[in-house]
Image 1 (cartoon, each protein chain N blue to C red):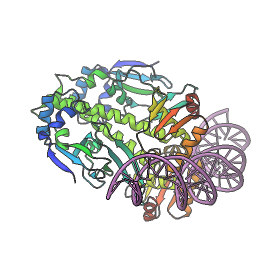
Image 2 (tube, rainbow over the protein chains, first blue to last red):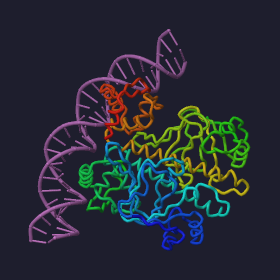
Image 3 (cartoon, helix red, strand yellow):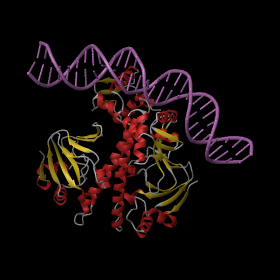
Image 4 (cartoon, each protein chain N blue to C red):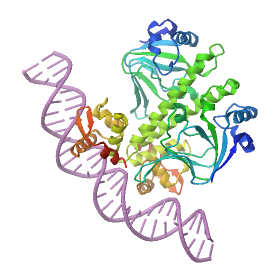
Amino acid sequence: MSVKIPAKNDESLKSALQNTALFRNLSEEEIQSCLVCSKAESIYYEKGEMIFSEEDHPVCLPLLISGSVTLGMDYSDGKRNIIAIFENKGDVFGHELILIGESKYGMYAQAQAKSHILMIPKDFLVGTCERNCGFHSTLISNMLLMMAQKSLNLNERLEVMSCGTLRQKIAKMILFSIGDKSSMSVSMSRQEMADFLNAARPSLSRELMRMQNDGLITVEGRKITVKDRNALEEILN
Amino acid sequence: MSVKIPAKNDESLKSALQNTALFRNLSEEEIQSCLVCSKAESIYYEKGEMIFSEEDHPVCLPLLISGSVTLGMDYSDGKRNIIAIFENKGDVFGHELILIGESKYGMYAQAQAKSHILMIPKDFLVGTCERNCGFHSTLISNMLLMMAQKSLNLNERLEVMSCGTLRQKIAKMILFSIGDKSSMSVSMSRQEMADFLNAARPSLSRELMRMQNDGLITVEGRKITVKDRNALEEILN
DNA sequence: TGTTTTCCGTAACCATGGTTACACGCAGGG
DNA sequence: CCCTGCGTGTAACCATGGTTACGGAAAACA
């Protein structure tokens, strides 16, 4: 069973919120004011508990403090579609639906592990608040930045997914995330990486090995080293 | 060749802007103030002209008044990836890059037909403006709403592109855009539709005809009629 | 009106990659 | 220690769909 605490009384929150995208550029005092003024609630969910379900009305913005949350949809034939998984402190989900003013979520959010969520009432975020104009506008502008960033991430994902052959997708993914280093450590399992690239796992394994044989990269478990950066970039042309 | 006019002198603009998402809830007088204060420009592009290209710096937010704009990327082998097509009054594009403060667009925007664009300087949107606080915050909150909507659209696009076979992509695209009607008119050419689905044009034609033969839909040029909605939904499982 | 260009469907060929099944190494638990 | 489960690489088979080339219809243009 989930445990609710008014957020203003939850001491562990204040420091946790300071480094989140939504509360960026706010002092601890301002965050404290936010928590009081917004009437936010700090809620602890057990593994498997629903944070919101498809029929719920979006009235609060959930912000993940700790734990792991799955966002998904049910199909009428009983199959489930996982839309996203959140497990980073400061992640928010469903904010688009709140901003749009949708009357139903149309998707569910479920705690994948024991999770700590800050529930911020919609009215505090969307409405204008005479008293606290200062940090209110900071909040809004943080929100804008978060959404812009998310939009770009989605675009990047689209770019990777739409760049032709599997080898090209892999090359683009590697070049995106390796920066100017020569080796990287993939945070995903092969299966997850395959899902990300929208490919089948054996196909991904096969292609990674081919790329190794062709002298483009070396693969050791989750460590990938670029051997021939030029050739890798050439593939994308 | 494109024709530039300072936006404050462009009489046709003011009424056109009133029903756009960005200027929602602003009176004609407030819009007039915006145009003066922002130093926005009203620009007319001929078909085929570039509105911005991949190397340009994002300094202005383009807002479509009339016409049609394609957002895309070029690969050096000549292939194009169409990211989006804008043809509705009030559409804006590239706003994420402006908000983030990206130094390059990384994509191009091209007029698909004679188009009328309002170019709003970035500084007006991002900076805070002491004088006009009232409608400034309305603008920002409109921006939030637009981005939320866009985020949902991108998700939809991702969903379409990652749903397996070409037939499934087509089915999902149709079901998304047909609502509860039984027929629809596609706004894209076959080539554009193929680019959108990340497929080759002949492959798309082939599959559309197969789906027609299988009694799922009928295709007459750009008009698609759903014959067997259940079967179409069944494909997605 | 005739000419040209664009758009679209069609067909044959073959590469890419999905599917399935299996084997191996490794970690955790009894 | 064995057993089990998981993550991973491998191989064979074949479906999906990309490629290229062509013809016809419609649209645009002179």
